[in-house]
Length: 544
Image 1: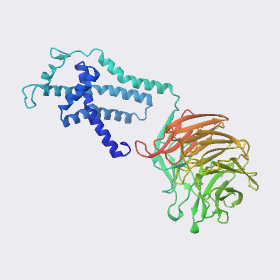
Image 2: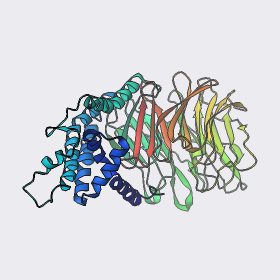
Image 3: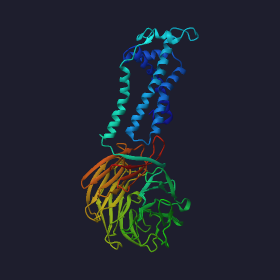
Image 4: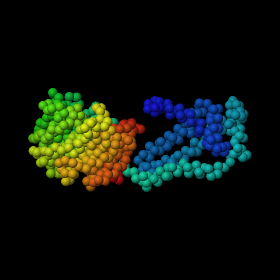
Protein backbone atom coordinates (compact mmCIF):
# COMPACT_ATOMS: atom_id res chain seq x y z
CA UNK A 1 0.00 0.00 0.00
CA UNK A 2 2.88 2.36 0.75
CA UNK A 3 4.36 2.11 -2.75
CA UNK A 4 1.06 2.36 -4.63
CA UNK A 5 1.23 6.18 -4.71
CA UNK A 6 4.41 7.90 -5.83
CA UNK A 7 4.44 10.58 -3.12
CA UNK A 8 3.85 8.05 -0.35
CA UNK A 9 6.51 5.73 -1.76
CA UNK A 10 9.10 8.53 -1.68
CA UNK A 11 8.05 9.42 1.87
CA UNK A 12 8.31 5.79 2.95
CA UNK A 13 11.70 5.31 1.30
CA UNK A 14 13.02 8.50 2.92
CA UNK A 15 11.79 7.44 6.37
CA UNK A 16 13.36 4.01 6.02
CA UNK A 17 16.66 5.56 4.87
CA UNK A 18 16.78 7.86 7.88
CA UNK A 19 15.86 5.05 10.26
CA UNK A 20 18.60 2.81 8.85
CA UNK A 21 21.30 5.49 8.56
CA UNK A 22 22.91 4.74 11.97
CA UNK A 23 23.80 1.27 10.67
CA UNK A 24 26.50 2.98 8.57
CA UNK A 25 28.46 3.68 11.77
CA UNK A 26 28.56 -0.04 12.51
CA UNK A 27 31.39 -0.40 9.95
CA UNK A 28 34.01 1.57 11.93
CA UNK A 29 32.80 -0.01 15.17
CA UNK A 30 33.13 -3.49 13.67
CA UNK A 31 36.68 -2.86 12.37
CA UNK A 32 38.20 -0.56 14.99
CA UNK A 33 36.53 -1.80 18.19
CA UNK A 34 36.45 -5.47 17.12
CA UNK A 35 32.89 -5.98 18.21
CA UNK A 36 30.52 -8.58 16.83
CA UNK A 37 27.96 -7.62 14.14
CA UNK A 38 24.99 -7.38 16.53
CA UNK A 39 26.99 -5.44 19.12
CA UNK A 40 28.34 -3.15 16.41
CA UNK A 41 24.82 -2.24 15.22
CA UNK A 42 23.66 -1.55 18.78
CA UNK A 43 26.69 0.63 19.47
CA UNK A 44 26.16 2.47 16.17
CA UNK A 45 22.62 3.44 17.19
CA UNK A 46 23.83 4.63 20.60
CA UNK A 47 26.47 6.79 18.93
CA UNK A 48 23.95 8.14 16.43
CA UNK A 49 21.70 9.43 19.21
CA UNK A 50 24.45 11.87 20.17
CA UNK A 51 24.49 13.41 16.67
CA UNK A 52 22.37 16.11 15.05
CA UNK A 53 20.29 16.24 11.87
CA UNK A 54 23.06 17.93 9.85
CA UNK A 55 25.35 15.09 10.90
CA UNK A 56 22.83 12.52 9.62
CA UNK A 57 22.49 14.35 6.31
CA UNK A 58 26.26 14.62 5.91
CA UNK A 59 26.62 10.91 6.71
CA UNK A 60 24.03 9.87 4.11
CA UNK A 61 25.45 12.24 1.51
CA UNK A 62 29.05 11.13 1.84
CA UNK A 63 28.52 7.43 2.44
CA UNK A 64 25.52 6.74 0.17
CA UNK A 65 24.51 9.53 -2.20
CA UNK A 66 27.89 10.50 -3.69
CA UNK A 67 29.04 6.90 -4.30
CA UNK A 68 25.63 5.98 -5.74
CA UNK A 69 25.76 8.94 -8.14
CA UNK A 70 29.26 7.93 -9.19
CA UNK A 71 28.14 4.39 -10.00
CA UNK A 72 25.02 5.69 -11.77
CA UNK A 73 27.17 8.01 -13.90
CA UNK A 74 29.39 5.06 -14.80
CA UNK A 75 26.37 3.00 -15.84
CA UNK A 76 25.15 5.85 -18.03
CA UNK A 77 28.59 6.27 -19.61
CA UNK A 78 28.93 2.52 -20.21
CA UNK A 79 25.41 2.08 -21.59
CA UNK A 80 26.71 1.08 -25.02
CA UNK A 81 29.30 -1.34 -23.62
CA UNK A 82 28.34 -5.06 -23.40
CA UNK A 83 26.77 -5.95 -20.06
CA UNK A 84 29.52 -8.21 -18.56
CA UNK A 85 32.26 -5.65 -19.29
CA UNK A 86 30.11 -2.76 -18.02
CA UNK A 87 29.30 -4.61 -14.78
CA UNK A 88 33.01 -5.30 -14.19
CA UNK A 89 33.97 -1.65 -14.76
CA UNK A 90 31.19 -0.53 -12.42
CA UNK A 91 32.37 -2.93 -9.73
CA UNK A 92 35.91 -1.56 -10.09
CA UNK A 93 34.53 1.95 -9.67
CA UNK A 94 32.69 0.83 -6.54
CA UNK A 95 36.02 -0.33 -5.09
CA UNK A 96 37.64 3.02 -5.86
CA UNK A 97 34.98 4.94 -3.92
CA UNK A 98 35.45 2.72 -0.85
CA UNK A 99 38.27 4.92 0.59
CA UNK A 100 36.00 7.95 0.27
CA UNK A 101 33.18 6.14 2.06
CA UNK A 102 35.61 4.91 4.72
CA UNK A 103 36.90 8.42 5.41
CA UNK A 104 33.35 9.78 5.79
CA UNK A 105 32.29 6.98 8.14
CA UNK A 106 35.48 7.11 10.20
CA UNK A 107 35.24 10.91 10.58
CA UNK A 108 31.64 10.61 11.81
CA UNK A 109 32.58 7.81 14.21
CA UNK A 110 35.57 9.70 15.69
CA UNK A 111 33.54 12.86 16.02
CA UNK A 112 30.95 11.12 18.17
CA UNK A 113 33.66 9.63 20.38
CA UNK A 114 35.25 13.07 20.77
CA UNK A 115 31.99 14.57 21.98
CA UNK A 116 32.13 12.25 24.98
CA UNK A 117 35.45 13.81 26.20
CA UNK A 118 35.20 17.49 25.41
CA UNK A 119 32.66 20.15 24.75
CA UNK A 120 32.42 21.34 21.17
CA UNK A 121 33.41 24.89 22.18
CA UNK A 122 36.71 23.69 23.77
CA UNK A 123 39.16 24.21 20.93
CA UNK A 124 42.19 23.34 23.03
CA UNK A 125 41.58 19.64 22.72
CA UNK A 126 41.93 17.95 19.33
CA UNK A 127 38.86 15.67 19.05
CA UNK A 128 40.53 12.82 17.14
CA UNK A 129 43.42 12.60 19.65
CA UNK A 130 40.99 12.23 22.53
CA UNK A 131 38.89 9.72 20.62
CA UNK A 132 41.82 7.41 19.85
CA UNK A 133 42.23 6.63 23.56
CA UNK A 134 38.89 4.79 23.57
CA UNK A 135 39.63 2.59 20.56
CA UNK A 136 40.76 -0.89 21.68
CA UNK A 137 42.60 -1.57 18.41
CA UNK A 138 44.96 1.41 18.83
CA UNK A 139 48.59 0.93 19.79
CA UNK A 140 50.68 3.99 20.73
CA UNK A 141 48.01 6.30 19.37
CA UNK A 142 47.90 4.68 15.94
CA UNK A 143 45.40 2.17 14.54
CA UNK A 144 46.52 -1.42 14.26
CA UNK A 145 47.36 -2.66 10.73
CA UNK A 146 44.26 -3.87 9.00
CA UNK A 147 45.82 -7.18 7.88
CA UNK A 148 43.84 -9.34 5.53
CA UNK A 149 40.36 -7.90 6.22
CA UNK A 150 40.84 -5.25 3.49
CA UNK A 151 41.45 -7.87 0.81
CA UNK A 152 38.47 -9.86 2.03
CA UNK A 153 36.34 -6.74 1.74
CA UNK A 154 37.55 -6.06 -1.80
CA UNK A 155 36.90 -9.69 -2.76
CA UNK A 156 33.42 -9.56 -1.24
CA UNK A 157 32.61 -6.43 -3.25
CA UNK A 158 33.94 -7.83 -6.52
CA UNK A 159 32.63 -11.38 -6.18
CA UNK A 160 28.95 -10.71 -7.11
CA UNK A 161 29.93 -8.70 -10.17
CA UNK A 162 32.47 -11.33 -11.29
CA UNK A 163 29.94 -14.14 -10.86
CA UNK A 164 27.29 -12.13 -12.74
CA UNK A 165 29.71 -11.35 -15.57
CA UNK A 166 30.71 -15.03 -15.85
CA UNK A 167 27.08 -16.15 -15.86
CA UNK A 168 26.08 -13.57 -18.46
CA UNK A 169 29.06 -14.36 -20.68
CA UNK A 170 28.52 -18.13 -20.56
CA UNK A 171 24.70 -17.65 -20.69
CA UNK A 172 24.21 -20.37 -18.08
CA UNK A 173 20.58 -19.34 -17.66
CA UNK A 174 19.96 -19.70 -21.41
CA UNK A 175 18.58 -16.18 -21.79
CA UNK A 176 18.16 -14.78 -25.30
CA UNK A 177 20.65 -12.20 -26.46
CA UNK A 178 18.82 -8.95 -27.20
CA UNK A 179 19.44 -5.56 -28.70
CA UNK A 180 16.84 -3.29 -27.08
CA UNK A 181 16.23 0.44 -27.49
CA UNK A 182 13.43 2.97 -26.85
CA UNK A 183 12.16 4.71 -29.96
CA UNK A 184 9.32 7.08 -29.14
CA UNK A 185 6.73 8.26 -26.62
CA UNK A 186 3.81 6.15 -25.48
CA UNK A 187 1.49 4.83 -28.17
CA UNK A 188 0.38 1.38 -29.22
CA UNK A 189 2.48 -0.28 -31.96
CA UNK A 190 -0.02 -1.70 -34.46
CA UNK A 191 2.41 -3.12 -37.02
CA UNK A 192 6.12 -3.47 -37.77
CA UNK A 193 7.61 -3.80 -41.23
CA UNK A 194 11.09 -3.88 -42.74
CA UNK A 195 11.93 -1.68 -45.72
CA UNK A 196 14.02 -2.78 -48.68
CA UNK A 197 17.19 -1.33 -47.13
CA UNK A 198 16.64 -3.07 -43.78
CA UNK A 199 15.18 -0.17 -41.81
CA UNK A 200 12.21 -0.63 -39.51
CA UNK A 201 8.84 0.99 -40.15
CA UNK A 202 6.64 1.18 -37.07
CA UNK A 203 2.92 1.94 -37.27
CA UNK A 204 1.57 3.48 -34.05
CA UNK A 205 -2.16 3.62 -33.49
CA UNK A 206 -4.43 4.22 -30.50
CA UNK A 207 -7.94 5.52 -29.94
CA UNK A 208 -6.99 9.09 -28.98
CA UNK A 209 -4.62 10.22 -31.72
CA UNK A 210 -4.35 9.81 -35.51
CA UNK A 211 -2.17 6.89 -36.65
CA UNK A 212 1.52 7.67 -37.03
CA UNK A 213 4.18 5.93 -39.09
CA UNK A 214 7.77 6.09 -37.81
CA UNK A 215 10.89 5.06 -39.70
CA UNK A 216 14.23 4.16 -38.14
CA UNK A 217 17.04 6.26 -39.57
CA UNK A 218 19.38 3.26 -39.72
CA UNK A 219 19.15 -0.55 -39.32
CA UNK A 220 20.18 -0.27 -35.64
CA UNK A 221 17.27 2.15 -35.03
CA UNK A 222 19.36 4.63 -33.07
CA UNK A 223 16.87 7.35 -34.03
CA UNK A 224 13.47 7.65 -35.69
CA UNK A 225 11.73 10.09 -38.00
CA UNK A 226 8.02 10.61 -38.49
CA UNK A 227 7.04 9.56 -41.99
CA UNK A 228 3.32 10.20 -41.76
CA UNK A 229 0.69 11.35 -39.26
CA UNK A 230 -2.85 10.33 -40.11
CA UNK A 231 -5.73 12.72 -40.74
CA UNK A 232 -7.75 14.17 -37.87
CA UNK A 233 -11.11 15.81 -37.45
CA UNK A 234 -13.89 14.80 -39.83
CA UNK A 235 -11.50 12.70 -41.92
CA UNK A 236 -10.23 10.73 -38.91
CA UNK A 237 -9.24 7.21 -39.83
CA UNK A 238 -10.62 4.27 -37.98
CA UNK A 239 -8.34 1.36 -37.09
CA UNK A 240 -5.63 1.11 -39.72
CA UNK A 241 -4.81 -2.08 -41.61
CA UNK A 242 -1.37 -2.55 -43.11
CA UNK A 243 0.37 -5.01 -45.43
CA UNK A 244 3.93 -5.31 -46.80
CA UNK A 245 4.24 -4.71 -50.51
CA UNK A 246 6.84 -5.83 -53.06
CA UNK A 247 9.94 -3.66 -52.98
CA UNK A 248 9.87 -3.16 -49.20
CA UNK A 249 7.02 -0.65 -49.11
CA UNK A 250 4.09 -0.67 -46.70
CA UNK A 251 0.45 -0.19 -47.67
CA UNK A 252 -1.91 1.49 -45.18
CA UNK A 253 -5.66 1.08 -45.57
CA UNK A 254 -8.52 2.44 -43.49
CA UNK A 255 -12.15 3.48 -43.65
CA UNK A 256 -12.15 7.27 -43.70
CA UNK A 257 -15.38 8.66 -42.25
CA UNK A 258 -17.82 10.37 -44.57
CA UNK A 259 -21.16 12.14 -44.19
CA UNK A 260 -23.83 9.85 -42.83
CA UNK A 261 -21.38 7.68 -40.89
CA UNK A 262 -20.42 5.49 -43.86
CA UNK A 263 -16.83 4.66 -44.67
CA UNK A 264 -14.71 5.32 -47.77
CA UNK A 265 -11.61 3.27 -48.41
CA UNK A 266 -8.40 5.29 -48.16
CA UNK A 267 -5.05 3.85 -49.30
CA UNK A 268 -1.48 5.07 -48.76
CA UNK A 269 1.78 3.59 -49.99
CA UNK A 270 4.73 4.29 -47.66
CA UNK A 271 8.48 3.86 -47.56
CA UNK A 272 11.09 5.13 -45.11
CA UNK A 273 10.81 8.71 -46.43
CA UNK A 274 7.16 9.48 -47.13
CA UNK A 275 3.64 8.23 -47.74
CA UNK A 276 1.81 8.89 -51.01
CA UNK A 277 -1.37 7.72 -52.62
CA UNK A 278 -0.88 4.92 -55.16
CA UNK A 279 -0.57 6.09 -58.74
CA UNK A 280 -3.60 5.90 -60.95
CA UNK A 281 -7.28 6.64 -60.55
CA UNK A 282 -8.75 5.40 -57.31
CA UNK A 283 -11.85 3.25 -57.38
CA UNK A 284 -14.62 3.58 -54.87
CA UNK A 285 -14.95 0.97 -52.14
CA UNK A 286 -17.50 1.93 -49.52
CA UNK A 287 -18.47 0.53 -46.15
CA UNK A 288 -21.75 0.79 -44.30
CA UNK A 289 -22.23 2.65 -41.02
CA UNK A 290 -21.55 -0.53 -39.01
CA UNK A 291 -18.76 -2.01 -41.16
CA UNK A 292 -15.52 -1.29 -39.38
CA UNK A 293 -13.32 -4.41 -39.53
CA UNK A 294 -10.80 -4.22 -42.37
CA UNK A 295 -7.76 -6.24 -43.40
CA UNK A 296 -5.50 -5.93 -46.44
CA UNK A 297 -2.93 -8.18 -48.11
CA UNK A 298 -0.87 -8.20 -51.29
CA UNK A 299 -1.40 -10.86 -53.91
CA UNK A 300 1.62 -13.10 -54.55
CA UNK A 301 3.96 -11.84 -57.23
CA UNK A 302 2.75 -8.23 -57.05
CA UNK A 303 -0.61 -8.93 -58.63
CA UNK A 304 -2.62 -6.26 -56.85
CA UNK A 305 -4.48 -6.20 -53.55
CA UNK A 306 -7.07 -8.14 -51.61
CA UNK A 307 -9.26 -6.45 -49.02
CA UNK A 308 -11.39 -8.27 -46.47
CA UNK A 309 -14.04 -6.27 -44.64
CA UNK A 310 -16.74 -7.27 -42.21
CA UNK A 311 -19.48 -5.75 -40.14
CA UNK A 312 -23.19 -5.61 -39.43
CA UNK A 313 -25.19 -4.65 -42.46
CA UNK A 314 -28.16 -2.37 -41.92
CA UNK A 315 -30.43 -4.91 -43.63
CA UNK A 316 -28.99 -7.86 -41.71
CA UNK A 317 -30.34 -9.48 -38.62
CA UNK A 318 -28.92 -8.57 -35.18
CA UNK A 319 -25.91 -10.74 -34.38
CA UNK A 320 -25.13 -11.45 -38.03
CA UNK A 321 -21.85 -10.30 -39.55
CA UNK A 322 -21.19 -10.23 -43.26
CA UNK A 323 -17.69 -10.95 -44.58
CA UNK A 324 -16.77 -9.66 -48.05
CA UNK A 325 -13.64 -9.70 -50.18
CA UNK A 326 -12.61 -6.95 -52.59
CA UNK A 327 -10.09 -7.74 -55.32
CA UNK A 328 -7.99 -4.98 -56.86
CA UNK A 329 -5.82 -5.43 -59.93
CA UNK A 330 -3.50 -2.55 -58.94
CA UNK A 331 -2.42 -0.71 -55.79
CA UNK A 332 -4.77 2.19 -56.48
CA UNK A 333 -7.71 -0.24 -56.59
CA UNK A 334 -9.05 1.47 -59.72
CA UNK A 335 -11.49 -1.32 -60.59
CA UNK A 336 -12.50 -3.04 -57.36
CA UNK A 337 -14.59 -6.20 -57.46
CA UNK A 338 -16.42 -6.97 -54.21
CA UNK A 339 -18.08 -10.26 -53.39
CA UNK A 340 -19.88 -11.20 -50.19
CA UNK A 341 -18.44 -14.50 -49.03
CA UNK A 342 -20.14 -15.42 -45.75
CA UNK A 343 -22.51 -14.47 -42.96
CA UNK A 344 -21.25 -15.28 -39.46
CA UNK A 345 -23.03 -15.44 -36.13
CA UNK A 346 -21.05 -12.94 -34.05
CA UNK A 347 -22.48 -10.62 -31.32
CA UNK A 348 -23.19 -7.17 -32.65
CA UNK A 349 -21.53 -5.36 -29.72
CA UNK A 350 -18.19 -7.17 -30.18
CA UNK A 351 -15.05 -5.14 -30.81
CA UNK A 352 -13.84 -6.84 -34.00
CA UNK A 353 -10.87 -4.85 -35.24
CA UNK A 354 -8.22 -7.01 -33.53
CA UNK A 355 -10.24 -10.20 -34.04
CA UNK A 356 -10.35 -10.04 -37.84
CA UNK A 357 -7.43 -10.99 -40.08
CA UNK A 358 -6.63 -11.77 -43.72
CA UNK A 359 -3.99 -13.82 -45.52
CA UNK A 360 -3.50 -14.84 -49.13
CA UNK A 361 -2.38 -18.33 -50.14
CA UNK A 362 0.46 -18.79 -52.65
CA UNK A 363 -2.12 -19.56 -55.36
CA UNK A 364 -3.89 -16.22 -54.70
CA UNK A 365 -6.85 -17.53 -52.64
CA UNK A 366 -7.92 -15.10 -49.91
CA UNK A 367 -8.60 -16.52 -46.42
CA UNK A 368 -10.11 -14.51 -43.56
CA UNK A 369 -10.49 -15.41 -39.89
CA UNK A 370 -12.86 -13.93 -37.31
CA UNK A 371 -12.70 -14.41 -33.53
CA UNK A 372 -15.78 -14.41 -31.31
CA UNK A 373 -14.24 -13.18 -28.08
CA UNK A 374 -17.39 -13.89 -26.06
CA UNK A 375 -17.20 -17.66 -26.66
CA UNK A 376 -13.66 -18.18 -27.97
CA UNK A 377 -14.94 -19.52 -31.31
CA UNK A 378 -12.78 -19.08 -34.42
CA UNK A 379 -14.45 -18.83 -37.86
CA UNK A 380 -12.46 -19.27 -41.09
CA UNK A 381 -13.75 -18.05 -44.46
CA UNK A 382 -11.79 -19.64 -47.32
CA UNK A 383 -12.15 -18.70 -50.96
CA UNK A 384 -11.94 -21.57 -53.43
CA UNK A 385 -10.33 -19.43 -56.13
CA UNK A 386 -8.49 -16.12 -56.44
CA UNK A 387 -11.64 -14.22 -57.48
CA UNK A 388 -13.55 -15.71 -54.52
CA UNK A 389 -16.52 -16.73 -56.63
CA UNK A 390 -17.07 -19.56 -54.17
CA UNK A 391 -16.19 -19.66 -50.48
CA UNK A 392 -16.50 -22.08 -47.58
CA UNK A 393 -17.03 -21.29 -43.91
CA UNK A 394 -15.62 -23.49 -41.16
CA UNK A 395 -15.39 -23.21 -37.40
CA UNK A 396 -12.29 -25.17 -36.32
CA UNK A 397 -12.66 -23.88 -32.75
CA UNK A 398 -16.24 -24.09 -31.52
CA UNK A 399 -15.72 -22.18 -28.30
CA UNK A 400 -17.96 -22.40 -25.27
CA UNK A 401 -21.68 -21.79 -24.91
CA UNK A 402 -21.06 -19.33 -22.06
CA UNK A 403 -19.02 -16.13 -22.54
CA UNK A 404 -15.27 -16.61 -22.38
CA UNK A 405 -13.71 -16.32 -18.94
CA UNK A 406 -12.96 -12.74 -17.95
CA UNK A 407 -14.78 -11.18 -20.93
CA UNK A 408 -16.36 -7.80 -20.26
CA UNK A 409 -16.71 -4.59 -22.19
CA UNK A 410 -13.83 -2.26 -21.45
CA UNK A 411 -11.33 -5.04 -20.71
CA UNK A 412 -8.14 -5.35 -22.80
CA UNK A 413 -9.09 -6.35 -26.32
CA UNK A 414 -8.96 -9.96 -27.40
CA UNK A 415 -7.37 -10.65 -30.73
CA UNK A 416 -6.43 -12.97 -33.54
CA UNK A 417 -3.45 -13.17 -35.90
CA UNK A 418 -3.34 -15.13 -39.16
CA UNK A 419 -0.44 -16.35 -41.30
CA UNK A 420 -0.26 -18.58 -44.36
CA UNK A 421 2.09 -21.52 -44.91
CA UNK A 422 3.75 -22.18 -48.26
CA UNK A 423 1.36 -25.09 -48.91
CA UNK A 424 -1.70 -22.86 -48.38
CA UNK A 425 -2.62 -24.00 -44.84
CA UNK A 426 -3.59 -21.20 -42.41
CA UNK A 427 -1.96 -20.79 -38.99
CA UNK A 428 -3.89 -18.81 -36.36
CA UNK A 429 -2.91 -17.45 -32.94
CA UNK A 430 -5.73 -16.08 -30.83
CA UNK A 431 -6.72 -14.98 -27.33
CA UNK A 432 -10.30 -14.60 -26.14
CA UNK A 433 -11.30 -12.71 -23.01
CA UNK A 434 -9.23 -10.54 -20.68
CA UNK A 435 -7.68 -13.55 -18.92
CA UNK A 436 -7.97 -16.10 -21.72
CA UNK A 437 -5.17 -18.32 -22.90
CA UNK A 438 -3.09 -17.73 -26.02
CA UNK A 439 -3.74 -20.66 -28.34
CA UNK A 440 -2.07 -21.63 -31.61
CA UNK A 441 -4.27 -23.29 -34.24
CA UNK A 442 -2.41 -25.10 -37.05
CA UNK A 443 -4.94 -26.01 -39.75
CA UNK A 444 -4.66 -29.47 -41.31
CA UNK A 445 -6.06 -28.42 -44.71
CA UNK A 446 -6.47 -25.23 -46.71
CA UNK A 447 -10.15 -24.68 -45.77
CA UNK A 448 -9.38 -25.40 -42.07
CA UNK A 449 -12.36 -27.48 -40.91
CA UNK A 450 -10.17 -28.58 -38.01
CA UNK A 451 -6.60 -28.30 -36.82
CA UNK A 452 -4.10 -28.96 -34.09
CA UNK A 453 -4.43 -26.55 -31.14
CA UNK A 454 -1.64 -25.79 -28.68
CA UNK A 455 -2.17 -23.71 -25.54
CA UNK A 456 0.82 -21.42 -25.12
CA UNK A 457 0.11 -19.25 -22.07
CA UNK A 458 -2.50 -18.15 -19.54
CA UNK A 459 -3.39 -14.66 -18.27
CA UNK A 460 -2.40 -12.63 -21.32
CA UNK A 461 -2.93 -8.91 -21.83
CA UNK A 462 -4.02 -7.94 -25.32
CA UNK A 463 -3.92 -9.86 -28.60
CA UNK A 464 -0.93 -11.98 -29.66
CA UNK A 465 1.11 -11.42 -32.82
CA UNK A 466 2.23 -14.12 -35.24
CA UNK A 467 4.83 -14.51 -38.00
CA UNK A 468 6.28 -17.53 -39.80
CA UNK A 469 10.07 -17.67 -40.01
CA UNK A 470 12.10 -18.96 -42.93
CA UNK A 471 12.02 -22.51 -41.58
CA UNK A 472 8.22 -22.45 -41.37
CA UNK A 473 8.12 -22.22 -37.58
CA UNK A 474 5.27 -20.25 -36.03
CA UNK A 475 6.60 -17.40 -33.84
CA UNK A 476 3.98 -16.05 -31.41
CA UNK A 477 4.66 -13.07 -29.13
CA UNK A 478 2.38 -12.01 -26.28
CA UNK A 479 2.29 -10.13 -22.96
CA UNK A 480 2.43 -12.75 -20.21
CA UNK A 481 1.07 -10.90 -17.18
CA UNK A 482 1.33 -13.97 -14.93
CA UNK A 483 5.13 -14.03 -15.24
CA UNK A 484 5.44 -10.27 -15.90
CA UNK A 485 7.22 -10.68 -19.22
CA UNK A 486 7.08 -10.30 -22.98
CA UNK A 487 7.26 -13.90 -24.18
CA UNK A 488 8.12 -15.36 -27.58
CA UNK A 489 7.04 -18.91 -28.37
CA UNK A 490 8.40 -20.86 -31.35
CA UNK A 491 6.42 -23.88 -32.55
CA UNK A 492 7.47 -26.53 -35.08
CA UNK A 493 4.83 -29.23 -35.52
CA UNK A 494 3.89 -30.36 -31.99
CA UNK A 495 6.99 -28.99 -30.25
CA UNK A 496 6.99 -25.48 -28.79
CA UNK A 497 9.57 -23.55 -26.80
CA UNK A 498 9.18 -20.20 -25.03
CA UNK A 499 11.81 -17.60 -24.17
CA UNK A 500 11.33 -14.41 -22.12
CA UNK A 501 12.17 -11.37 -24.22
CA UNK A 502 11.92 -8.64 -21.57
CA UNK A 503 10.18 -7.56 -18.40
CA UNK A 504 6.67 -6.35 -19.04
CA UNK A 505 7.05 -3.04 -17.13
CA UNK A 506 3.33 -2.34 -17.29
CA UNK A 507 1.06 -3.96 -19.84
CA UNK A 508 0.63 -1.91 -23.00
CA UNK A 509 -2.13 -2.20 -25.55
CA UNK A 510 -0.63 -4.19 -28.42
CA UNK A 511 2.52 -5.83 -29.72
CA UNK A 512 4.05 -5.75 -33.19
CA UNK A 513 6.55 -8.18 -34.69
CA UNK A 514 8.44 -8.72 -37.92
CA UNK A 515 11.67 -10.37 -39.08
CA UNK A 516 14.88 -8.55 -39.93
CA UNK A 517 17.02 -9.25 -42.99
CA UNK A 518 18.73 -12.14 -41.15
CA UNK A 519 15.39 -13.72 -40.22
CA UNK A 520 15.60 -12.67 -36.56
CA UNK A 521 12.44 -11.51 -34.72
CA UNK A 522 11.99 -7.79 -34.03
CA UNK A 523 9.38 -6.96 -31.37
CA UNK A 524 7.84 -3.61 -30.47
CA UNK A 525 5.64 -2.92 -27.46
CA UNK A 526 4.66 -0.17 -25.06
CA UNK A 527 6.54 -0.08 -21.74
CA UNK A 528 3.91 1.90 -19.87
CA UNK A 529 5.78 2.11 -16.56
CA UNK A 530 9.45 2.07 -17.49
CA UNK A 531 11.90 3.80 -15.15
CA UNK A 532 12.59 6.52 -17.73
CA UNK A 533 8.91 7.09 -18.48
CA UNK A 534 6.56 5.39 -20.90
CA UNK A 535 7.76 4.73 -24.42
CA UNK A 536 7.73 2.15 -27.18
CA UNK A 537 10.57 -0.36 -26.91
CA UNK A 538 12.03 -2.28 -29.85
CA UNK A 539 13.95 -5.51 -29.24
CA UNK A 540 15.84 -7.65 -31.74
CA UNK A 541 16.65 -11.24 -30.81
CA UNK A 542 20.26 -11.75 -31.79
CA UNK A 543 20.24 -15.50 -31.18
CA UNK A 544 16.76 -16.81 -32.09
